[in-house]
Length: 349
Image 1 (cartoon, helix red, strand yellow):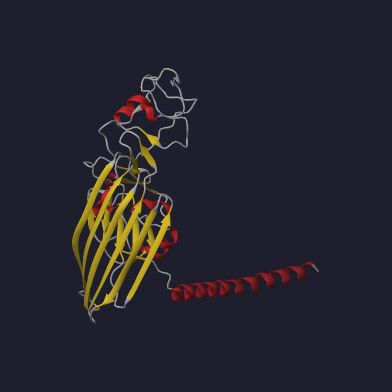
Image 2 (tube, rainbow, N blue to C red):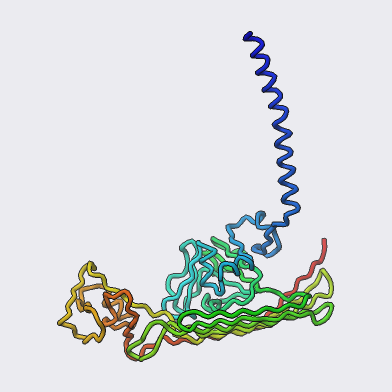
């Protein structure tokens, strides 16, 4: 009886060994067919040529136009929503912003400092990250490369690189428009038209307007700060006489005129070296709440170096009043414009 049972077990094991490879082969074939017909291949140009994302030996995040639209990304600062390793910040002025990847990058946003993260827009290098912090307009894709990229993009890419590719002209007529309104009278308008001019020439024009009132009150200069006032115009012409040759010309102009980057300093009750004195206040602070007057607190020289008046310290987390030193202004104006050309020629071989 035992011998019969053993023979049955061996027979079942042999049948399983025969059937298992057939099942695996069938699954592999189905997977290949699925990949072949799904068309879900992400093409990037991180190394200067078109490659599948899976074939690029670089840590890279490829963000499509559809992903940008669904996440509501409209400028480079908002890329942190879809690229967690990226940080774009500005503490003094939007024009002096800096980018960091994996926590590595240029410390400070002084306009004299070059960023450790290079930014390219349609293949054109932007020497200052702040120049790319305006509205992006219609985007084809964005590639964020993590780690040193000096071999292909130059010396200012020790932390990484950001490649922004705008939507090119197409040989089909199309147009779009969008408008939004939010708090602080935020208004954003965007629109564009794409049209074929002939069988070999196509053109498009896009524009963006964004305006918002400030939400911090500068009591020294009696004005609102942290507002938005920017617009972008981009025109493009594509000449494609054959499938092997194309010439693309891009002209863009963007402008930002806004008062940026004010912040309210909150003084917590438990701060060390803090001395709260509601009666003895040499600055005659005109806001509610007790003021910090202890010069032994290390935040006081920091505030003075930043042009802040210690009267701006508050214990009210909902207070939006600031007291910059007289003569200091948050106003900033940035203009960025240029013309670029791109030639693609397949020489065969």
